[in-house]
Amino acid sequence: MRPLVRALALSRVLELVRSPGRRCCSGEPGKEIRVRFAPSPTGFLHLGGLRTALYNYLFAKKHGGTFILRLEDTDRSRLVPGAAESIEDMLEWAGIPPDESPRQGGPCGPYEQSKRLDLYQNAAQTLLENGMAYRCFCTPQRLELLKKDALRNRQTPRYDNRCRHLTTKQVQEKMSSGSPYVIRFSLQEGAQPFRDLVYGWTQHDVASVEGDPVIIKGDGFPTYHMANVVDDHNMGVSHVLRGAEWLISTSKHLQLYQAFNWQPPLYAHLPLLLNKDGTKLSKRQGDIFIQHYAQCGYLADALLDLITNCGSGFPENQMGRTLDILTEQYEVEKTSTHFALLDLDKLNDFNRIHLTKSIENPKTRIKLITQLQVLLKETYRDLELDQTYIERILLLRKGHLCRLTDLISPEYSYLWIRPSVPKEELQRLSHKATEIGVLAVRLLQDRYNDFTLEELNEELRSHLQRLEGTKYSAAMKLLRMTLSGQQHGPSVAEMILSLGPTESVVRIQNALIN
Image (cartoon, rainbow, N blue to C red; front, side, top):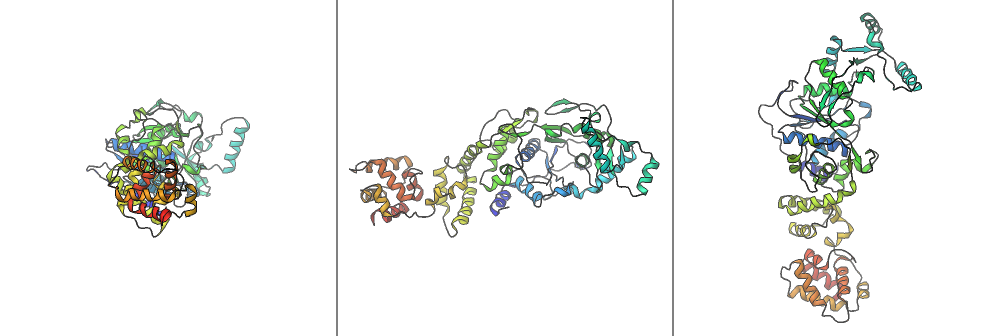
């Protein structure tokens, strides 16, 4: 992670306030709101994951609850180095840091599933003892044959629950011989309906379409279904806000809760976040990862505003909402079941709005000045500029800048280094280049007195229109080239106000007069 991005992330971490009387992580039902974001570090945080994390954060903060980050890292073969740390970095950068996490710690740790294996083994033993789970000794070859046979008959592949009917003696014989096994959960037919906070009353009779699911794999690690139920219970999770792709699995999870005799949390399944054309967001799209937007100079508030603006859960869609406003407005029951179509082409517009607000706010403007100083030193090495100058640039360019990084682009290089424009080139723009320069210098030396942008524009027009034999537009083009080395850009008046009268006079004299 780049030093600047890490600094931005750390600067947004809020002070964690832990209220007295915090509910213990016993899994017993209580009144405290506790939600979790549980990504797998098999990849870096992307837009869909950020939206799920954000909705959990908003729900927790609106109700005075706790936001937990739990890493579901049991699929060891697919772990991506650095992904676990990056996920938490990006939540901090986005301004939605977890209250409990691998980094923050907390009363329900550890917060990585790979460090909680004893909990899952003990839970599996409970199910084995009460008859709700069994050891399955079916070989991969037999399972593959079942799959091929189902596909050949145009059926959905499913396990046939063969090992559920093994006798105790048969199980003991296979274990004595060292036969490898997994542990499966015995699904019950006739699933009960449940009320989802988004989709309403829902029912999926999973036993009629699926075989008994594996809950402990051959390597001793739990599957998602087992681990998320055990962890949600032991961490005291009160509400589960997750993607709609898990809606069908919820009946399976509720059966697990019933088998353990635990009270389940309430569920709210969030509709999928899709591209604006209705296609799925893909990790192959390099621009869906949050780290990409942080490194490109986008503001976290703009990204959060965009991904909530295309969805639901709020009274109305409007641009420019900050995290505080999102927290105040969010109501999970207002979430619609329609797909959320994300138009990333609008991100620049959202960022411009939020950058303008940040420039206008004295507190956030100071942070922007510091960030820009870091960017300038990375770009121009030995450049030393005082805060007053940088602040003046930001105030003059607000509403025009899309990202803070725009100011280190070649378009704005004239603000930091003097351009080198051959005098012959300037002379070709106007045969009265020297006279134009003299008039401009005289104005800046004799009459410059804290002009506003409008006043300086009017003064320049008044003076240069008196010059015979040249058009006002040609004179402006010449002065713009003299000050910036560019034919296009901000108005000449804004350039002068940005650079200041002294620097502007030096550039004009060096290029047109001396």
